[in-house]
Length: 589
Image (cartoon, rainbow, N blue to C red; front, side, top):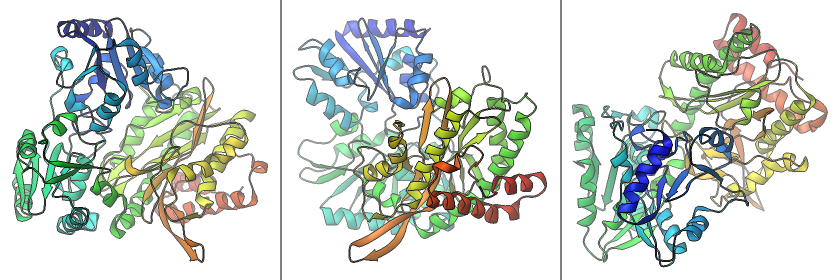
């Protein structure tokens, strides 16, 4: 079946129930960012492979909404199908709600699979659809997807306290204290990263994200874990039993939820709870909603997590220096391409002790491919490197000591004046956040403006977030903190964030410079407590594309100091041509 045939078969099912619009989100029952192959329903129905987007099919139209990271990719992948790209954030395109309000009749039916639809999205849709009927129990994609991948049953494994820095017992006690303070009798937890963090376990159910599909229900005197029990070996079972964690089959969560006595209060996160779970709660149970308690807890890293992550970045920095040296030698031959380079980078990381997996599919984009924000090289069609322009390399790994996420843009030869100017603007944006001092509890939106100011002054911008929280051997993207327009989450000590401004010129070039940072105490005075960012990433930043006259004295001193620190930290682990490459990369400008 090609995409258009899938659309037609979906419409036949819709016609039987007189469904006017069917929504297919990018989601699993836990509203995860990265999905098991089994739950990639939107990709199945649309052919679009990006990590974010929503498909809507009516009886005569098919639309795909996605954000600016994927505009170029989506346009290419949808080209030979009926699907039309709808650009989120572009004023020329309606929102999903605006579109449905326009095309669905006043009393028409809109349907979706409630297991894959969050409570937050449902409420948003319900509030804007008036008298239209929302049907949340129609799983049409399963009827069409006959060769659907099965779910994994890999074994769960335990993270030792020497890596986590805190026991499960300590975490559950802190959590219950917060539940008591807020008057919550029960806490439903559907976010699998939070479950793994709380229990100090990890799994292998999703590529690039060492987690296991599960649910938890926590009360004042009982903890229940719902999971495929085939994933539990004797060691994990003994650990769970020792910690008085009751284990049930995965789908038993619905029974546990239904059996909560009336007049009790349950807390849940509407962004990480699906509609099917929500509908299982008895009507006389009181519901409180907000950001997961555990999400706020795990955002503040322990001292052991901070220490270990620094070690992981030294390990990763050494690997990347070796890789950049290898790549520049290969580029000079005119035979190396993006795809081969991405596989080599994985191989080099995998040689490190404690390596678990890449933290996402490496983005290696040369010249105009770098303008595709989430470009992933494929075996067919990858560009061959030449001694000109720049290559953008965004990659990371999970080690036992922590998770890394790094982007560097490397000059491979002669650059245009426009490339140099754009590179320097992005570098200024990157540096200015590391130079910033900001009040305790400053929001991500305010920090975003600091980073973007050099670009805005030049009349330029980028349309992804400037930074995201980073998990500890969990998802590389972690909340609640973000450096982005519209983010009202306050930044606090010992949060992790990426700092990754960029600039993307379609059909020409793309630039991004990303490091991971820890929020740390700066000073306190009569005006209050001030914070700053501590760089955790030590990989040289290429100085060859810099137009030095565009830097302030403070920025100039920062880049020289930073690269000098890279040389000090990484040189003990390098030798031969790799060491010479590091020294050359770290020369003062």
